Amino acid sequence: MKVFRTVSIPEAEIDYHAIRSQGPGGQNVNKVSSAIQLFFNIPQSSLREEIKERLLKLKNNRITAEGVIVIKAQSYRSQEKNKEEARHRLAELVRSALKAPKKRRATKQSRASTQKRLDSKKRRSENKNLRRRVNPD
Image (cartoon, rainbow, N blue to C red):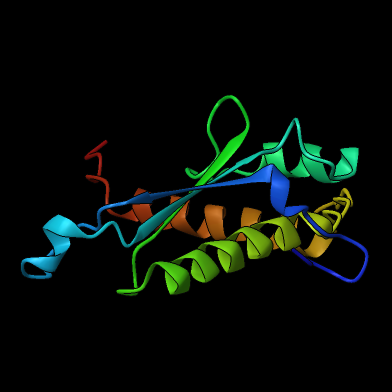
């Protein structure tokens, strides 16, 4: 399965299981296993190490603690269409890990913004002092 120009996943590394779909569907939903569950083991895959690390660092509820991606596709009534949908979602997930995250550049607050913040605090303080009770002395 081709994910990107330089990245592909061999079909042997992807496991599919046909399961019954959830929700309404009449009598057919109880008899036919049209939903697909896709399993992809990240640590045992043939992907490059940096892609594996980025995939494992993703905050995604589809990735288990063992590093297995589990995708459930049940949008369509046909098993083949659901299989294609699951493969497409896996490709999107791997594509999102291909981009290297941007390095964070440390920034410093400008002198003008600091002064503005202090001035507004001073104005707020003076306003609250004017609301106090006047001392008769």
